[in-house]
Length: 130
Image (cartoon, rainbow, N blue to C red; front, side):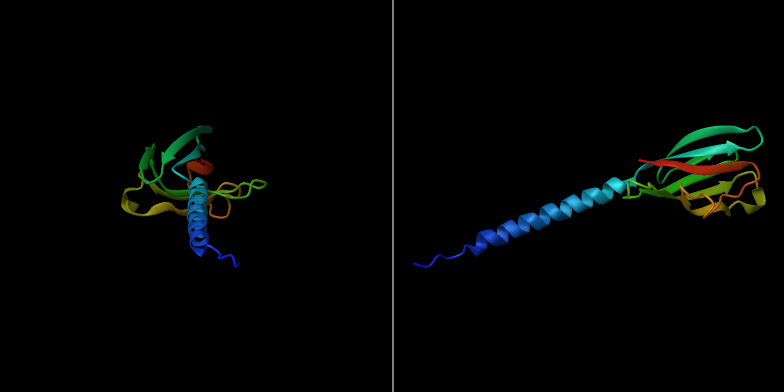
């Protein structure tokens, strides 16, 4: 007597495994991307630090700066964590350059000098993405 393999059950198990694997990997990728960022702003004149929480996609006005975070992401490596965020900053005190960004690009928490924020009064650095 020959035993028949039930290929229908094997295919269903394979489909369930693939669905589980895809959902797990998608949720892991979503854990790396954050909705909020924390940045520190240093006023070079008064030497005061301010910690600010930004929601991605919303613009925040801080004194003479307009700051907007578009996206942030945490690294998947635990031994050397890296936080990156895409940030746009405008100087509102400069009226003739109203549409020009003082900073427009990716900011790195571990290496702020890769894409430096250059402003005579303020200094900004990325602290956290969550």
